[in-house]
Image 1 (tube, protein in one colour):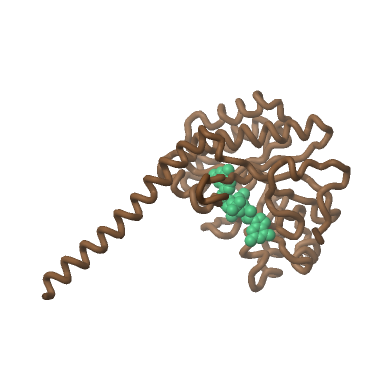
Image 2 (image 1 turned 45 degrees about the horizontal axis):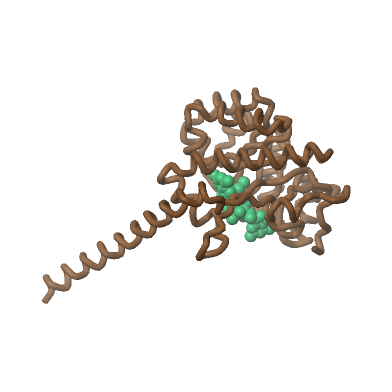
Length: 278
Ligand code: C2E
Ligand code: MG
Ligand code: MG
Ligand code: MG
């Protein structure tokens, strides 16, 4: 009967929703535990100078070594952690880890930058500047080596407040990068008014159709505002040649190296990292 099947349809729909929210609850519970049991890891991906291929620094990227599921990518758990607020303690932990690692490399004579991703929830914490100041103080990292990466979306939630906060962060001596540039609701006016240092061109522009036009336009714009530009997601030597020809300052991508644990990356010889073949 129509009424019956209608009711069934509703029930199935609800059941689907329930299992989805149940999965998120489980994920949240497991993630909370992971933070205390050492299942969270930080991998590092090199950022190289476009012209020379010399290392200029690393980006810290969180990973979850799940006991059953293996390495879980941040794309799976960061959105849930953002919803529940768990991203705040996770982010503070990643920042501390990354600063300690960069300070260790700095201590071995390698003045490499460390870029750390910051989500909206972290950025909106009233004590965020203090959290960053503490991470610098505890690690002893030279603030000039720390770069915080924020997306346009985070900044655009409240541009005036963001500008004030970014100004306070930069007063610590650190730098700010706008991540995934071009994927949000970019406003060109933002580039003029925001205190930022670096634009990271999203890999969809580096790899997509009309890459040359898009990358070229973003680079001119960024350089006109005195910003450095990093091209993300460079996987082929053709893409590398293109972003070099278009005067990108830095390059990040699988062509050079995938994100890896610090001990696999430690530059044992000057001139590291690896050549593009590897
Ligand atoms: P993102 O900040 O834009 O980081 C770059 C992503 O592109 C990383 O993915 C990196 O592994 C990947 N990637 C780098 N080179 C290539 C390439 O040549 N080809 C392809 N296909 N991909 C490349 P990952 O590590 O899965 O991280 C995804 C996103 O998760 C990050 O994007 C960032 O938004 C977020 N995320 C990662 N770690 C953290 C963290 O500690 N805190 C916060 N809030 N977000 C994080
Ligand atoms: Mg990033
Ligand atoms: Mg990015
Ligand atoms: Mg991204």
